[in-house]
Length: 205
Image: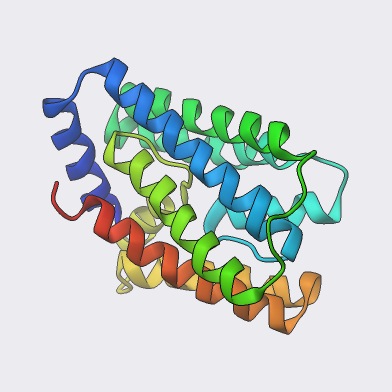
């Protein structure tokens, strides 16, 4: 999902829905992402791409929770996003991040729902994509790497999509050393499933 499309979806959403509706659906999306990460993916050593993936890796390697890392690492991108998408985008994105943080904290005591890799990847990736798709559809975001990608693309011959893929391959490549080759492959497949679900979630905007 590229920044131009993200901006278009946000602008379309602003025209069609009230702020309260957007808040409600952004919160629902964040809860779906929390369910996917906490009850399917993370405890099976499967991660997402982008800043979420980096936060999960750093959380695994340290004593820090994913939520604060997600907010910290996204902060510079949110500041840039303010210039491109406005303060409403930043507000809804921060709301999504805090809701995800809270959701993961509340779900932490519950056991993982399955360890079957096919269910983890298929169901976890689908729920993840639905959640992120809802957040984007109603004006927010959980990941700032797309904003960095558009800035870099303006100065080089690479496209936004190429930069996004480069970032994510670096993240999944790094996860090999943290979680192992098999888990990194599972993470990549989960990301591809989620990416397609996100695309379906916003395509009619």
